[in-house]
Length: 363
Ligand SMILES: Cc1ncc(COP(=O)(O)O)c(C=O)c1O
Picture 1 (cartoon, protein in one colour):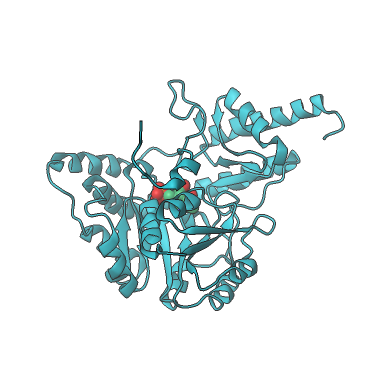
Picture 2 (cartoon, protein in one colour; picture 1 turned 180 degrees about the horizontal axis):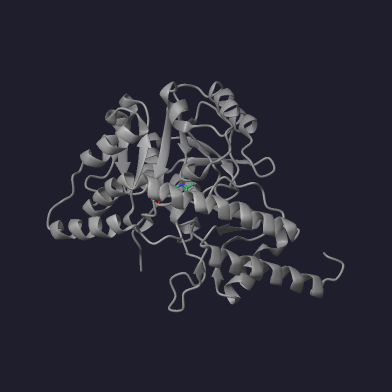
């Protein structure tokens, strides 16, 4: 039977698969998707319930309330903000608006797994620049920018390694990017950053009209299921992007809950603080056991396990813990509740002990 002609890229694409056990009947501890471990604050459940009264109506297509409240908190003009159905939806819009014959996107690799997928779907060629150690190699990225480059993405902190780009390095890099090339700073984990040298994308975007910043309510704000994120950039760029976004994409529950979450900022940031403390504690425990774990500024840790990554992931799954495995490279584990983190540290220790027993030389 003849099938319709679809993008040839689809044959190279494998569907996104959540880690083993996350959505199964006996749920594994979910440490694979960098979600908030906290249940929603009471105001959030109420906001979702109240939006439920109006589901026969379309949501506000311009997300005006949310944009206004965000603008107030971020200290930027509302016309610098566009809200989307998660920051991936905004990323997708960026790929769509830069696509065209010969268009290329430059990003560090390994980084967020969605970039090559969105690039391929939009027909934009991916130029992946290997990380230096565990961090972005901005010099090498700048070297790969050509006339064909329409978009550059800097994931800061980087998913999955958790490393950050400093303000000085970022501004030196931007000086080498032509003003006609769009730069997206993907700051999905910004709220977890404690390193004072880390670049503040919002400040950088203020004096670089070609820079846009992507943020999300899915991580620190704990609204992953509601799908809401935002982009901040030059008002002229934002006005064009608003035209390209899918209308009514951000549902009413997402809009009202995000407004409510912004009103609960202090309580939410307290939760973020506890995640940061857990990040430090879990990393110290892993380092003490001899694992290679770079300093992470996000809500996850990266274990550079190389050839042992797949076996480690399988071991965690066997012991009821879902982690994100990058075979041959490493494993990313989200920082969860203290109990979940203790369980992970125990299981990781068990894997090491077993490996030593199997290969006493420590190989
Ligand atoms: C670097 C990065 N950007 C964006 C996202 C997507 O977030 P959202 O839920 O807002 O689509 C993620 C989610 O894991 C991420 O890791």
